Image (cartoon, rainbow, N blue to C red):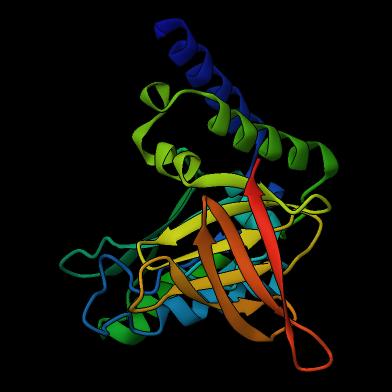
Length: 253
């Protein structure tokens, strides 16, 4: 077991060294910045979001409901952004960091402003950093590395995984209806998603109801229906063109 853990740690280290900020396409900006709580973000999150979009990154939110399928299936394709308050007595200063799926900081930069007022000062400090952000330019090789890393996470026993990545692995299960194989990814205790790696849109999003094992379902097509567990299977009542419904049964694979 120790040997597996050591090999996995080495794998993460090698991959971290192989990838840089521009190798990534997806960046999560938290709904609330840890150092700027209570609605006092001073617009830093919006500035960061717009800057990343202008440099061809796809910005995601904390909620996974609207994440693209490849981001859900391959969490190691995603970076997590954070803006830290580094102010001193005479300057407004911030630190911008990006962490990978193993909580490894792959980019960190400090910005400092002589503007004394908080909002324009913090914004000025952040904008100095954003000039140094490279344009997103993932290539097939680094994409494969991220996919391999995500797959490695799901293969290694949980007790050998870093704590921060074991949860993602433990919530991913596969289901099939004989034609299509989907991954079930738990978002939280009240909702989960079925995703198809060949589509950029989740196959179906499930939200719990007051009745156990019965869910409100939003299909990738935008239609709404219901789904439920039955004998360990996931059943979706698929709407038909004549107004009727047909049961689509997905069994654990």
